[in-house]
Length: 122
Length: 147
Image (cartoon, rainbow over all chains, first blue to last red; front, side):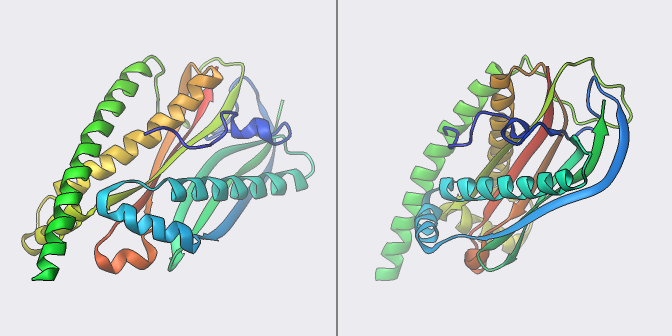
């Protein structure tokens, strides 16, 4: 399977100069201040066209490209909201220990959730 | 009678196309895993010293994968007697390896030498079709690449 149309640029470079990492600190830098937990979430529903296409795909199995793209967009939005929250703290220039979660909350709707700790690094 | 014919056609389609695609996908995965073997992945982050690095970035790979008609049927049969549901095992295995590879390939394109604190997660998003035995699962892999 070929990879879908996700951009090759790392998430961090698309948004300001905020460093995003799943580590507890930033390699080569030192944490000087904590700004606490920041989070972003979004709930997305798939539209009917994609649902119909997906139900055909259910006969032969394999990847549901439409859903993969939809959820990637949604995850990007959740990340953007988290970044916005970090920027609102005033001094944060990195988010460490980022975690993602997905869960389906209702029929045909999924919640995408991203959270991390905003910090200032030097 | 007509129902039986439709069922037989769907089973044949699901089995034929499904297993052909699974075989192709596994070949593809094995080839790409060999290609990306030079970049190690780890899932530690807290208790180990970090490697010396200039730069780090977050990478996410994700895939939504669904079962075929044949897998659904054989899984529902398996439900009667219990035990390992191998048809779903291979499905999730493929999805997880695909998601990991997508993350890794993006990181390699960026110039990564190592990927740290990798986390894997999956969640069912089958929604309306859940009652019909169809599974749609999103698998995401994310980690921090350093260079």
